Image (cartoon, rainbow, N blue to C red):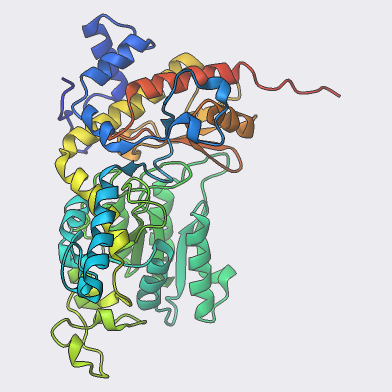
Length: 480
């Protein structure tokens, strides 16, 4: 059995890199790491191998982009490497959703108060499970709306430009929805976006944002910054940011920081309370496997909420104190928790899929999940470099493609972003034709994310073989 708890030094990094551990296992087992036998041995030793059976893995015959030429047997499953975009469906989701529908059908309006996930309180049921994953108190967690709506609600309340302190900070590669939200919030206050939205850029010729540049901006311009909107994990490159360090630096300069944790939750280890994070928001359909368009989550720390003494800028009946809610008073009596931000009642059908996923995560030992993540993504990286000639050095033009995601395991999660200077669309299409489901983010990045709960080392090995074949058959460019 693969070691469940990798050794770590005081910085949080593994004492042994994934490469070192994989090569050590290969030597111990008398196998070469670039073989199917090695991949299958890793799978046989995987303490999480049984969880894959609890997910619905798409069949190649059911996916429109798959070429039937590559289907070798009936019921052949795709290699699903797109969990960073949309996680696979837990099979248990069917039962959870049917229980909600059955309760509604049998009891009508009584389903608001009784039965499985009562509509009036359904969003409270996953809070403890969610809080355990992100390192928070359940009362600091609120399930509501979607991610961008929650970012807007938090910014409308806590982005209060005043006097010299009126600027907002965002990174240049931010997901477009975050960028649009930031731009519109600045404009909402009647401010010029060009001069009041500070945009962090990677250095010339680089793809990753250097953390020292973030610290430098905070130190230099912190007195004029009202709020920073940054990701815990960068969606395009997969880079993990120093959440506690940046949070501390921002606080010292009097700045509020809002963390978008969409690509962090159920991917990297989070300790929101320990890291003294003030506010954060995330979705539940990526690494959390709760289904397309599922409900979003916001986090507002008790300490921050009490110290600010600000009520939500937008309020609704569902944010009223539960003790006085049904007195139907015209005056707003706020909840003494993150629930104060709720505008409408929770959706039991969406919460049902959340419960299906979080109950499964509660069964998983976090050290096992993180260890497999390191080895699974590390195996991908090892084979890309050793077998395909990939490099982390984007300036090396002799390589067929480059890995943008940091090599340091403390600076990445499951995702590897590969930069293809030539033929990114062709590469993506050919992977999809072969039943390897991933995504392309323009202009030149294919994102691949093997997930500890449902991907295998054999998936990784087969993807590398497909990439080898695809790279060998790049279209010949016409010469003038």
